[in-house]
Image 1 (cartoon, rainbow, N blue to C red):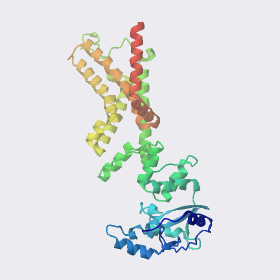
Image 2: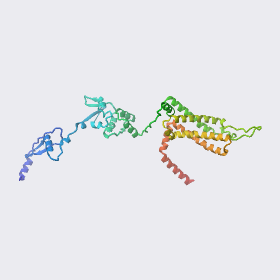
Image 3: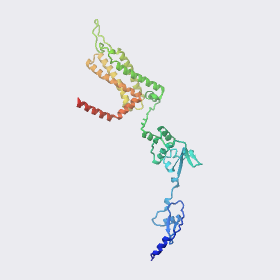
Image 4: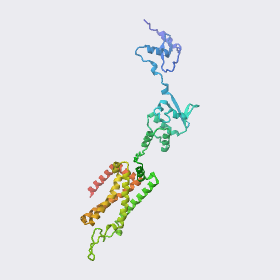
Length: 376
């Protein structure tokens, strides 16, 4: 049985100087084991002995698993125009196809004297570049870095198209749609000629001709409604009285100069539509395109008017019904104005804006309709 020390012994221990301590550092280990001797001296036990003891104890985990992994925890210094960044190699190795993630690619910028990688690039941008590796693929542009400079840094560090798409989407850029092209070489050239004016000089010339024809058609549509250019005494479907016992004389509507110019415009519109339909890569997609539907609607009134005029000349049909049909069909020609949107980026943006704001516009029209009903 161990006797309790007396009070005097405790007082002598308090007045005595602190016991000496002997420490021995283990190799590459942080945690150390301590044992207390009978002389109250703290002594460090060697790590090798601890490993043996831990292995000897049943159910006790070995300390080998706590040894640090030098390959994963190895740090690398990156110098960006004098500003040093320090990170781990395992962070960069998450994206091995990039400039910093591929050891062979980044070796070109290694400085053996300073034991670091040196890049003469934009310093504020590298905060976001390094964060891309640390976050596992998140790309955020710093506020003080312009968009064009940051996009150049993304290309330089070879972060890839996916990172560039994320960056463009985060900045609010509209993703460019893929342009499918016909497999046949002749159809591809014709499709580029009539569909993409920026592809070549001849394509730009055809686009200019198309715009001029559209403008002429719109001007003719407006001029033929003016009183100065209308002949009310001349009814194209009225039969003139018999002159000197001869057959009735028909005033042909085809001699009207407005009709001639209109015919020339329709010939161009029809030719352009048929050529584009022949050369398009997908007939189904072509038929569903809203711009192509507008092109079809713009030329249909002419053929309906032409059929009505020919039927009246042969005496098949009623005159009043024909006039009513012609008046309605003439209004459909207003859709030719929308043909200009094919050649105008501004009109296309306006159309996309109206499409995106359709819900708000519908709500506005609804409230206006309520106001009209209440105060009418």
